[in-house]
Structures are given as C-alpha cells and as structure tokens.
Figure 1 (cartoon, rainbow, N blue to C red):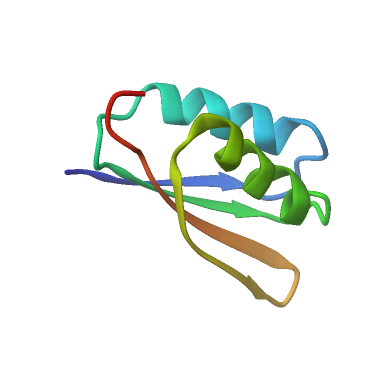
Figure 2 (cartoon, rainbow, N blue to C red):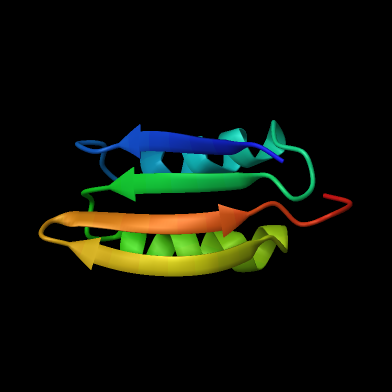
Length: 77
C-alpha cells in the first residue's frame, strides 16, 4: 500500500479534479492519495469525483486557503 501526495495549489477548475482522476487511475487498490488544492470549487468537485469513481474519501479538511483531501483507492477500479 503506497501513499502519494498531489500538490495542486494554484490550479483552477477543472484542473484539480482532472489531475486527481488521472492520479487515481495509476493507483492500486488500497493505495492512498492526498490532494492539496487552493481552488474553492475543489471543495465541491473532488467529493463529487470520488462519488463517481467509487473510491473512498477518508477525510476532507481546510487549513487556511488549502483544501486537503485524503482518498483511498477502492478495489476493482
């Protein structure tokens, strides 16, 4: 099981969601991905993306202007 951090600070919609989707495709089941974004729309887009992909949004937090999402790749995706 690996853990990867994706720094998407400064990118605007739709790039954070697109890059997160691409990163998830390269992960094995059980791997974790931490995504850091500054785009306010990522607070909507990333959770919606995770619902679409069937992966697991383990946590979502906001520290100052940075949104941090911790995602676990589901099996069979």
